Image (tube, rainbow, N blue to C red):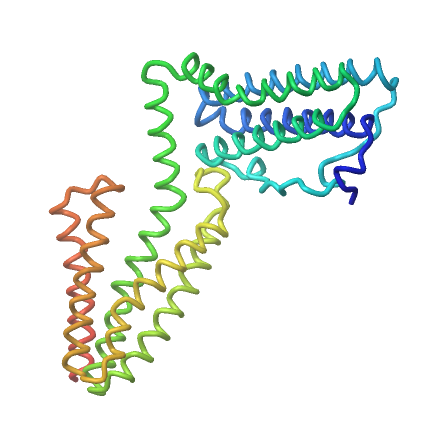
Length: 318
């Protein structure tokens, strides 16, 4: 890789052209990726793509006037100092907030590049254009704000925020809730059955850990293999599987950890208290994100938890 200071003016201009071309294409990918769910925000990125295209055109005109027609291929990965960007434009469906955050990062990085090149060039016309472009990148965030006022007026922004919330529920809340319910409820029976059968906290803890990890692995794979998200809009299957498996394990370990307490009665009482807290959290999530009436959510979750808990107690005492 080359160091930035080793670049000539010709190479620095070629790199600037490459950067603008890459940013233009990324903004175009953002626009296309957002168009189905967030059409107004897609229009915002269409406007930003057009601005990057204009920057590239002006750089090419200056380059031709100074160095001729051939533009060497120099990319940012060939030069030290650039931050490696996560290719979120390859992920479908796109996360609106992640896209906006990365777009802001791209503008800051490009502005700093222009300022640094301008500070070391001796050519007045190159210095002027790079300073102008740096100023435009600095005002790009303001320009994006103007585009949002134009394109996201009225109820459009509220509609897009509602769509973004829907995607959040589909991609994170649903698999996370399924895992938390499975881990918190299904592991109650083996944990409390082992506890009452052996009257030993450590044995109950080992059974709880095994059940939690096993359930987490099983639920994670089941969620990841359920669908690839291409038709349902539920996002990357490996990410959903990770969320589901992790929440399943957390749900089971929650009421398992109290059995680290040596006193069996105290450990059991603490485990019951944690179980009630877990069921309350599940009830709140169902009410908050799944639009389930609070009483109905509490009844459904409480009934399921009580039945599984009693199953474990009866088996443990048999």
